[in-house]
Image 1: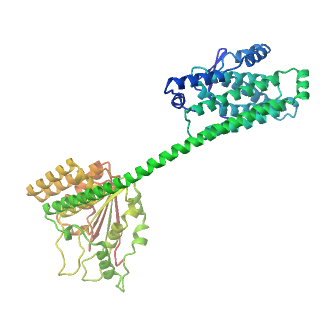
Image 2: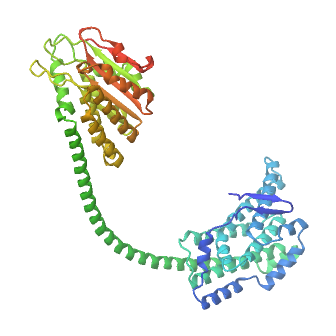
Image 3: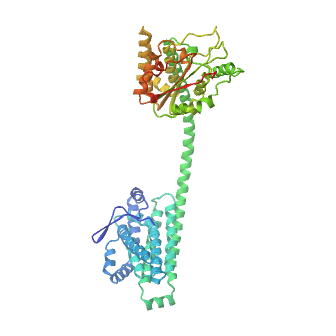
Length: 556
C-alpha cells in the first residue's frame, strides 16, 4: 500500500499533501462551475440532501461517547488529513505487532495479521471513494467532510472490535471496484445529471458506513437478536446494491457524454484533416521550392569559392573507385610481390589501433619502398589511404567526426606524371570538402561565416607569398572547424612525398592545431620513398606519444 508522508507533531497529525487526491483542483472547480442562478440553486439542494442526517448524527454521538480518550482525539476533525493520520497510526501499530509475532501461530498474532489485511483493504476503499468525496467538497468548503468523518468513525469502531467481519471486508472490496469504475471512465463532466449522480453515490456511501457502524456498535445480545430476526447482510447488501446501481447510471451517463463529445471531436477532426491536407500540400510545395533554392544557392557559393581559388575539380576531388581500381590493376598482377594486405598488415597493427582509438590528437605516418613494377610512379601503400577514405564512417563514425582527404598522385606513367602539389591546393580541397557537407553548409548560410569566407578569399588573392596564402587558408580552416565544433577531425593525405615545398610549412600549422584546438585531430600520411625518410621533418614539434610511424617495404 502506498503511504503518504505524515508528520506527527504534538497531539495531532500534520500532512504535507492529501493522500487521497484523485482529481486536480482545476477539474473539481470546473465540475461545479455554475452558469446561472438555477444551476446554483440545484447544486445547493444536492449538497443539502447529501449531508448527514439527524439519525446518523445521533448514532455518531452515541458511539463517540463509548470511545477512549485517544480514539476521540483521532476524531477531532473530519478531513482527509485526519483520516490518513488515523489510518497511519493503526497501520504502524498493526505492522509492529505482526512483526513481533511473525512466526507465532497464536490467535493474537493471527488477529494482528487480520487487522493489517483489513487496514490495507480499507485504504484501497478510501482511495476509490475519495474521488466522489473530492467532487462533493468542490461544491463548497468542507461539504465532503461528512464522509471523511463517517470513514474515520467506522475505522475506529472496526479496529476497536479487534476482529473484523469478512462480510464487510468483502463489501469494501466490491465497493472499491465500483468506485474505481468512476475514475476509469475518462472525463468529469459538470452536467446537472452528473452532479445529481455524484451526490447520490456520495450519500449512499455515507449510509453504508453508518449501517456498518450501527452493526459493529450493537451490544452482544442485541446483536444476536438482530442476526436472528434480520441478518445483517440484508441492509448492508441493499446499500451495496444501491451504490452499484447508482454508479452504473453514473458510468452510463459519462459514456453517453463521451460518445457525444467524441462525435463532435471526430467531425472537427475530419474538417481539420481536410484543412491540414490542403495546408500540408502547400507547405510541402513551398518547402520543396525553398530547399531547391537553398541547394542552388549553396552550389553557387561552392562554385564561386572554387573559381575564386582558381582550382578545378581534377585538383580538388578524385574518384576513389577509379583510383582503387588503378592501384589493384598495378600491384595485384605482380607475380613476385603480393599487393599490400591492408586488413592484415595495417588495420590489425597495434600502432594503427592505438592511433585510431587514442582520445587525444595524434599523427600516423605509413611509408615504405615500392619496387615493382619498375616503371610505376604509384605507391603500393596508397590502397590504405583509399580504404580509410571509403570506409571513413565505419572507422570513425559519421556523426561524431569530419573526415577529409587528399590524394597527391592518382595517375601513372611518364607522360601523365603530374607536378608536385602545392600546400594551398590541399588546404583548399579540405575547406571545400567541409563546406560541401551537410554540416559545412551551415557555415555558408551563416552571415558571419559567409563574410569571413569572402574576406579570406580576398586576402588570399592579395597575398604574393605562397607561405602567406597557406597561413590564410589555415586560418579559414580553423574558423570553419570552430564554427562546426566537431568532436574529431580525420585528415588523410596520400603520397605526402609528392607535396611541393617545405613540409614544415604545411605540417607546422596542423601540429599547432593539434596542440591548441579542443577538437581532436587524427592525421594519417602515406609516403613512398626509396631511401631513408626524414622523420624529424615530418614529426615537427609533436610529442613522442603523438607521433606514430609504420614502415612497409614491398620487397621486405
